[in-house]
Image (cartoon, rainbow, N blue to C red; front, side, top):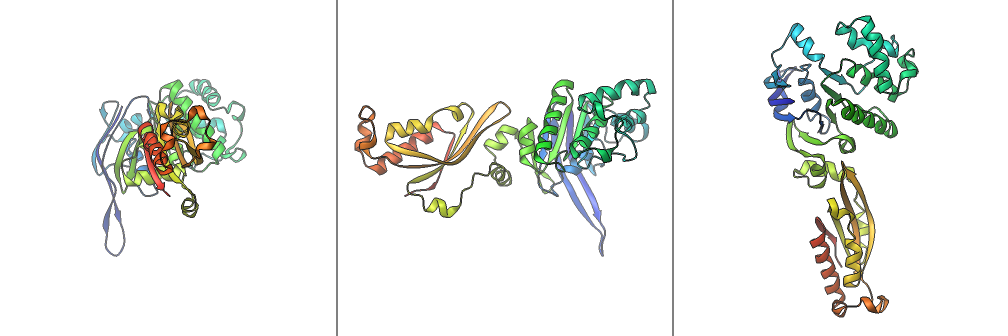
Length: 357
């Protein structure tokens, strides 16, 4: 659907000595028809600049932009305007016209596209209903909440039935609850209308909620690309691992780990393994106690990911029901804990020993 081939974007920095700054550096991406594709990175990574090359709001210094099989890189004038009608865009700060009603804001793209008044009168109520604002047609932006303003922006962006919807940090100006509602709306639009969505964000939580595939940008380059599940579950680049670790927030204070008797593990379970009873099985088989210190199980798409911080310690034989005692209980406490750790390694996706006594 969208192919970016070796895209670079350079800007001239004016000062005592003019220099060139490369905001995007030889990026190639293939975004499939009908998917929600995320581009994530910190401020200055180049993601907004890259997004704007798709509709040529930013012209690449090098490389080609292809949309639906057509090379649009060199389009100008009326040909470019016609192409942009197929590509809707929503912005971080809404970009609404404050002296016009919700109806007129939503109708703006239709009027620019030369639609008749009859078409506009039919289409605008449809799209306002789609975004849940059918009762706000005569309101002005100053009378709306942030979430409602963004819904107007979405209505305007999809008014011309575009094939592509570009989303430039669509939730960063909103609170958590409103952000979740906007992401659900975008997901619904993608599923109901089949619109290909390209979304950029500096928040991994946003990417996790809605995107099927993800590109991670740093310093103008794409440093990693893959399914959202793989990016979160098994990140390859150090920068991506940092982003994921910050999002999952499973760190516990070092002094707490150091003062906990026993062996402390960070355990990753993926897919079906996230729903298995591995830890309780380890406790029963090897006579150890298993305490969950911190963790979560969540779903990215329809696949489970569980990440837990657990403590393993010796369980006195006398506290174990006789029918559960096996030969392993006759071994030393250290051997039982080691055997339990090995069992967990064999049945989990990834195990890291944080601390051992």
